[in-house]
Length: 267
Image (cartoon, helix red, strand yellow):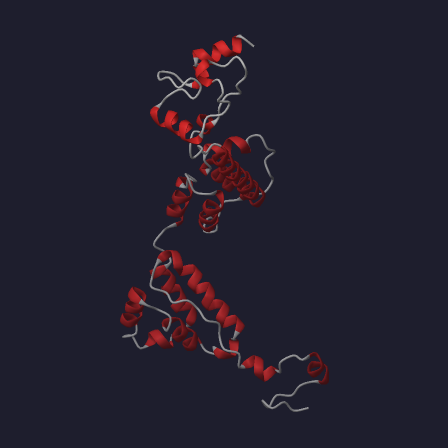
């Protein structure tokens, strides 16, 4: 059975609804990010380009097409580098492996392995979350040859004291991934507790006790007789003037009111 695109589709393939081979060959390469020459973006950029080459091999049958594809994504100082190199006619028609080696030497090697290890040892969580710190940690760790045990020690040292102290109470996970997962959990739980405590300790919008009158009975002071409850206006007046809500006199609050004490003593 001939497909409209010219490819031949097997009965089983047609039944499964799979695209024909010719369609797969014509699949466009993935969209890759541009690159401006920043060290921290170099390896990620080359990884995206490599994936494009592997996913669409028919789109890049020659080394020169791979080189042209990468140069088409360059911007800023990276493009200026390519412009300068293109004055040599062999630059665009040379081998891809030679181009890649020179590209890495120019843009991906501003930091030596020693520099990266120093950055890793200086890493500190500070006020950021363990999730954020672990992202930078993993990025740097991937560029070293250190094993899990060494990396675990470095990661623990980078934690802030709050997480480190809680971690000391837990059995140490056997793997680096397990350690990072545990620390993320500890940090997340602590941050949730801080939010809860902050809500519980938030001050009230107004001093509520000021609006509560103490229970009055037959032994209340003469000025209170017949007035079991203060009117809202009287309460506001006493509160705004700093007067006692029980006896209406200045110089003390209801908790230390002598008249209220006498009333309670007579009960």
